[in-house]
Image (cartoon, rainbow, N blue to C red; front, side, top):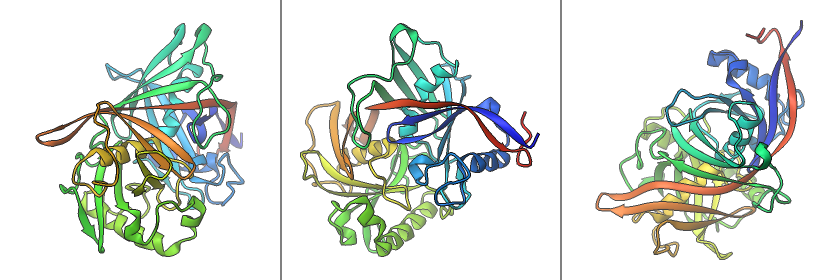
Length: 363
């Protein structure tokens, strides 16, 4: 035997895609697991020509699922971000778009039993310890991928997957504001460092001489911006206790500008070395929380809804995304209760993926 075969379900989750796998079918130790995932994705080539990746950060993601031993959760979701070219695997972040497919994938893989009509799958995000309830459409006790829900960045329509995020504050750094400040000035740029679903560094686009309405492609050609942005990101990593983040995709980076398309605020989200073509689900929650928090870099840039839960509409590089935020501004500051989004997913393929036996012989 020269190769080891591993079962997978290949799915689009939100505006990302990748293999969804049973954690029990993969190496237990992270070092070997990283080598296996690099081989599966084909990291090390810009087209991922020797693997299943798609040559972009949104298509080199892997979800690993298992039945949860948590009293609340049905499924544990362990995420890996594999680099396109650098043969690196980051187990620190989670991914909310890939999360969109976790509920359906868990049912497809036999980890959760489908109910008639719709099935609620309670998910523990292992990377950050967040809790998420996913409502999956299951007519006739089978996952449906047909419906009228539409999300910007994906053609056509599909069945909705409603996600309700809980316990997302401080998942990586342990704090809502990991520096302890609403605003820090780093290298002459005012930023808000916030950890909600994803640790982020958030700034005004104008602080970098940008409008905030540039296309993703235009931003990716701006080497000077990326150099300035990454220097700030590296400094924040040290300040918030994340250490050297030069080879980590977290913290992510976000830019804000006044809305121009009828939304609440205009945003651009970075992964962090390329601009996201749409918006990360996790990043959307963090950016929405920043908008709702008085005193951050977003203060005064948007009209804040008076009601709670509040719908924050983020304009991104390909359209909009709505985040429904249940919160309160208590005496101690902004308190996030939960955040909800609607995404879509689709099963694309299923079968076995092969990795060289020299990397891993299997369980």
